[in-house]
Picture 1 (cartoon, rainbow, N blue to C red):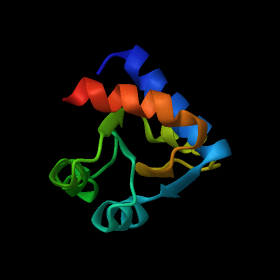
Picture 2 (tube, one colour):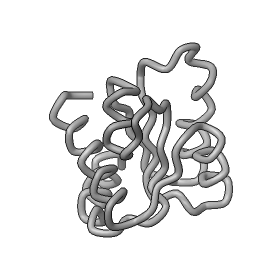
Picture 3 (spheres, rainbow, N blue to C red):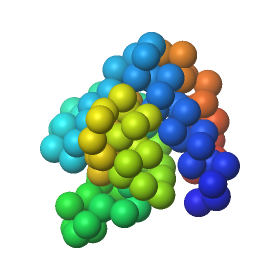
Length: 109
């Protein structure tokens, strides 16, 4: 994924953090996908070992939830308002990020 789309994904997470709701961490994200409450799922590419988040893209696709990858856990954690890195985030209430999330979803179709 290009740097530009990374920035759009992180922007969506940041906006959702302040105006909507987020679930942070692999377990919370997995639950949000399974319950169908996730509107956008974001995973960091540098998660180690990758097996930790390997199931998330497949689950999201199965449920028809837009999925995106960003380069680093640090960037994702910062966008989610955390002082630590995180491997995955799910937006459960878009808030003002609705338009960006719609665009990202369209790009995947």
